[in-house]
Length: 289
Image 1 (cartoon, rainbow, N blue to C red):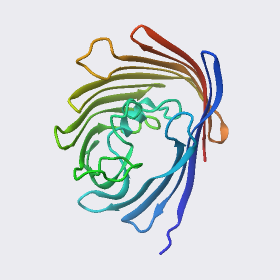
Image 2: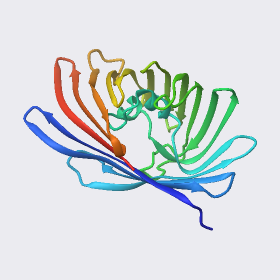
Image 3: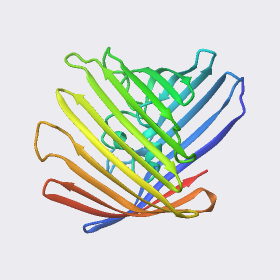
């Protein structure tokens, strides 16, 4: 059985300057193919090319191999599926090619995993989703007998990059271990209108008896057609029981949206760790096809 589909992709790369080093960096390449098999069944396949760590070779991973089934009860997803823990927050921020969402950046959740999912709109603008996945993410096989349960409830417009409106929601995940469960909670909200987009989230994680949290706020303003200015500020505390061990992260700049799916974003980043700080200058590029 063959289904007509669509091929697409997105490329992230940048030029950075920090301290005594300057470099062009390849960040990410996504190749995707998806389509409809019938009125009820669709599929999506996504390959992710990137580096596992700095100064390592590029590696290719299968990030999604997802089957979607629409029914009168709701929507079901099977296979290697996208997680429901971060996408709305990432859309509120709006610039994945510049920086990951706060949850993804600080590794509070994988972005995809193997399992099953169910989503349903109960009333207008109230969307619920529930996933049961391995919990290891899309780069690792299952390593134990436990699974992660992830719940998302979002009210309002979930894609503020394209549409005006607002949203508010909560995410909760839990995964049992041989000792205490790993849990994560995210409370978030966003607004878009009159050329302005705002986003904010508060994330909490308990893992191996250590409590961590993130506060992330962002703002974007459309100065004129194809020119936006933005700022984002994150406060990350990796262990709330230890004083002065946190990290403050500020990124601000402009985004130039060009023809042909190209975006260019000159920006500056300032990271503060206790009494130490690092300033980095970047120009991020995105190409969509």
